[in-house]
Image 1 (cartoon, rainbow, N blue to C red):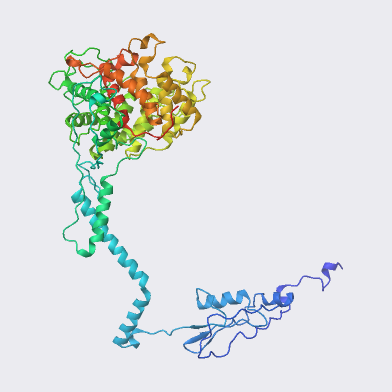
Image 2 (image 1 turned 90 degrees about the vertical axis):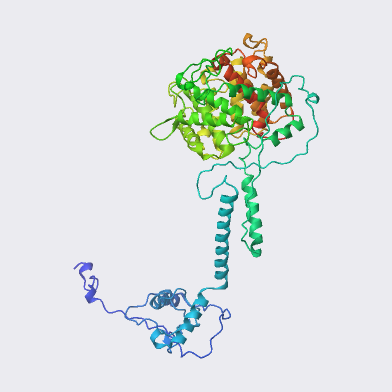
Length: 639
């Protein structure tokens, strides 16, 4: 017989298994009747009992279901939880089962007495007793801190109602409720004591243009406290007034702020010698020429002598062949956007008190109705022209500045939807832009990319929605157009033009360095400093003599504009000299007689396409640079 078949070795069935002896219930699980006096909250610590391993293991074993669970001894109103035996601790399963049956949230302290109130029904009490118990319950539920919190929240709601009332009644430029704004945010001016200064005392005063700059009057509006507020709410009145003053003084953030485009900002720069009265006279003369050459439909045209019936609306051309050198480009949106940038750069808007407010308003309306809307709601300002993305960037930049300076929601949609189109049109492979949206075969170029980036930057500082990935991708594009051997201090027009080293890449170098600063390059960056130094050494374009295109006073204002912006934002002490040189050159060559008075024209490849209108807009914008944007950096030491 095999060992496995032996009766003693055969596996027994459950029925044949002998009954195991159940462990005895642990002693002292049922306590003595509770005493009337409540034991102290905390007991002095005692040394844990030491048990042999076998006894401790047996004490932690799960008790058999046949053993009755530990119970608590009740006296009707008081219940005593079983204390831990001094000989052997109660096992964890026993405690879990005990507490789960009693539905207790926290295990009590062993040996503690927990009072279990009897269940009292309403019908067992009199009316007065029931109300007294209810009052005690409410008082116990709502503590002093809860009442204080309730009072504070009520006061906050009251203050919020007052703020809304004060802002809607005292300052119509802001609406928390969400309506449209008809009046811009009032700009708070800082009174600066002015020292008498004449035009003759300025180093640029020898070349003046006889004109006057219109004085803009900006009034400060403060919310007026309500008359029915009691004396106890005087502190609330002061808080509301402070909030109203803060809201009235809000301007876009630094790195492109429009705060300096005010009469106070200009006066401050005049006193410091950063700009001259002669330069301001030249700006005013240029703006007058632009206003006189606006078409009846509200837009401008590079082709000054255009007889487009739609643009004339039954009227006559603003310039019946009286100005020479008209342009050839047919994008009216680009022409209108550039003219708007010139007016906005001087601090003039359609809501401020200035002689050009109606010109600006008509131009904004022209752009609104001259835009196409695609299937996704984006605004397209290309006009089906050959190089339409130029018009897109310039137009959207002007709309963003107009919204940022006035917060007029009438043109918010055009500005935001125009930005959406720029983001959509970006080349996903290169990170830049070309003449047409996401040009895969044509790649990207630096000039078109610069205009789109500046539009995105204007939208960002105006509080519009610009996805971060779009401007950040421009950094990848700039890496592809670095001129070989310059390590990022010079940039070319396109990636396949990187070998060029003549004047044709100087404008794109100024653009690339400017975009690098907007993307986060700091002034201590050696590559940036070397690039800025190179641009300063090149100087204004009229000083270039190695190319016949720039001899005899000719200029590349396209380069001059971006170079002026670059050096202004860098903030070096050499900036003043560069700006003084370019300002003198522009004031010298500004037309001063006839129908061309106040305008500019320089024969150049770009100047010929845009003609007199493009040259005039760029010249005015160059002269406005000191107060057009606030510098990105401050106190940079000279080279």
